[in-house]
Structure formats: C-alpha cells, structure tokens
Image: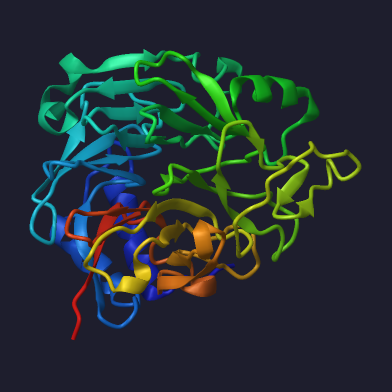
Length: 395
C-alpha cells in the first residue's frame, strides 16, 4: 500500500473537493495556500522563482494571445477556460463557452490573425478574434470539423484522446491524433493510416484540405514549430515493457510523409513484442532526443524571450507529467533541452523539479509550458488545477 505524505494528503483532499463535477469547491485562499506549500518543494535554478499564477480545474494546455488580453486553457474534462492576464498573476479566470456541451476540449491554439482553435476528442471549433470575442463565443464560434469527421466514431474513447494543436507557419492547422491502444492491433493499421490516427494531420483554417502529415506516432501531447518551420513533437511510448524501456521521445518532422516507427518500435530503437518479427517501414525517423522511460513527456515550447539567461534562448522547455508504469516514479518536472548545431537533437536536463514525492505520490503534475510576452514561463498542473509562472531576476 502506497503511503502518502501529509502534504500530498492535504493536496489530494483539496483537489478532490475542488474538481469533482457538481461538487463544492474549497475556499480558494485555502487551496492557494496548499498549492504554495507544494511549490516550496519545487527547485528551479538559481535566480529563478516559481509562483502560483492562476487556478483552473484540470488545467492542461495553453494558448497565449498575442495582444496580451487572454490566455486560453484546455482540459481533458468538460470545460475550457479563459485567463485575463495580470501583473505576475491572473486578474480573472472565466469559463469559455459555458453553455456548450464539450467533450475533452483539450487542444487550444491560436493563428497569426488571432483565431482560436478548440480541438475536442472528435470536433474542431474556430473562434475568430478570440481575445476580443471570447465573451460572445457562443454566437461567433464555427464548427470546422464536425463530430465523426476528426476520427471515426467507432474509435472514440478516453484513451489517448487528449488532442493538441498548433497553427504552422504555413497557416494550416496541425492536430495530433493519438491512437487509443497501448500497441495498435493489426486490424486497425490501415484505418489509422488513412485517417491519421497514431499520427498528425493538417488542414486549412476552415477545415478543408485535410491531409495526413506524419504517421508512426503513438500519442503525441505536445507540438511546437522552430524558427525554420520544422514541427517538433513529444511522443508517449509503449507501456508494460519494463521500468527503463522504451525511452520517451522528442521528434522533429522536417517535411510531410515521414513515419516515426510506431507500432514496430515502442520508443527509440526498441522493438515492440507484438511487431518484433515484422519488417518496419523503410525510412523510419528516430527521435532527436530520447527521454527517461515512462516520464510522460507532454507539452513543449521553444524559448525566444529575453528574460531568461542567454543559454536558454532557442532551446526547448517541456513538461513531464510523471510515470505510472514504473516501480519508482520519474518525471513530474519541467525539462530543458539544449539543441545541437543546426537544431539537431541535444540533451535534456531537469529545469524545475520537486513535485515528485517518490513513493509518496505527486505534489503536482506538469502538463504544458508556454511563454508570456515578458519572457516568463507558464506551466500547467492538472492534478492541482493550477498554472504557475516561472520568472528570472539576476542578482
């Protein structure tokens, strides 16, 4: 039986009371106090500070408005949120589309002209001029991919259905479609290749012109474009193969049509048991960076701000949600990846950690990272329903 630390018990009780659907939320100040106690255990590098920016139940993904008027928050439950930014912390947190019936409104991303794309498990909605129009979203929202057209209805499930999206430099909308199995059954391979499940699809901003951009991906929950227009993405790899294999992945897609190896490979160069005797497709692309097994690498972003020291500029910040399929927990931290020459794969190291209490459980579980206009970094935590801000001040 797992023994929880006293602080973990406090946080668990607060989270259960706050986020049970239809339940009564605890006092906000008490909740903030508990979360800030947990944050006291988190240690970023010298000169950096981490603080509570906002509370938003089940906060998962982030899309920061260019005008500085709104930050959009996706979840894997029934609600999405809008944060009105403030100085060092949020001014307010509101529900986006409060009267709508949403199913896992996880994916949030913004176009250059300010349109918000909200990607649910099996639907895509666009809200134009979202930073100004979000209060009237119900009247201006347009469904650009109707239910049943993003994935076949027969493949709907809770498993690996937390979509993420990004608008590329080509103006098209990119969406990662996790396939709902640990290892894809053979009788689903053709269907998934055709529809882009277990891959990434892209389309025009009105939902037309859909095509499969990449295949061979188990479950990506993080997309980001570099300055050259290349798409980078995390991938969560196969469970139940052992504590230390297969590795998690950070990948790079330089062009459409690439295959990243799943289900023939479970992660990195590790073959799956189910496809060990099958010849993999030709030209499989292996990861730029391999991460520790089962840490659950999720959201990532390239850092372009001026607040952090020079060594962080152009590198990748990413979130590890934390393991469940491992005897000793790993992850629950923010990572930083220094890239090699020409943006080739580099090395990752912990940047902010302390949410992992070992066998005592997690004090928080980071999901996504996003940069604010001032160069500080936001981090979501779905366990505590919190969004943190990491800032730097040189001594």
